Amino acid sequence: MDLIADILLVAGALGAGFYCFILSRRLTRFTDLENGVGGAVAVLSAQVDDLTKTLSAAQASAGHSSKSLEELTARAEDVARRLELHVASMHDLPQQAAEPPQKPQPDNVFFRHPRN
Image (cartoon, rainbow, N blue to C red):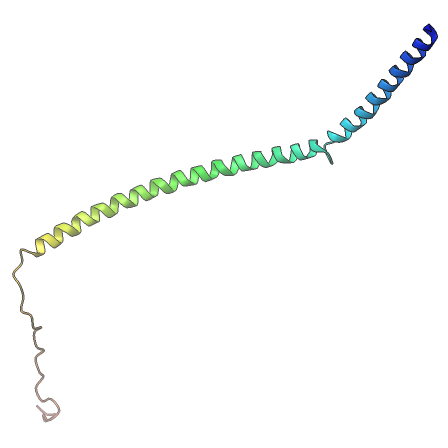
């Protein structure tokens, strides 16, 4: 009976060893840097680094554009205030005649004698 128990124990140990060997090979293929998930993780990590750099550049550009837009808005508001003052000062001027002035008609220069 002890012999049968020892044979079954050795068979179980060999089966467990074989199962561990198969799992080890599968895990090695799974974490392979070229074809497996390890490669995908490496590629994704590089893409995250690139996106972080691009995001930083975009934030800097947006900050610069925002500052420029604020300056332009301030200038536009200043010009609008000046225009309002000019329009307000135009109300104080007297009204001009509705008809535009007539151009003076030239003398009859075609019928003059060239010696004159």
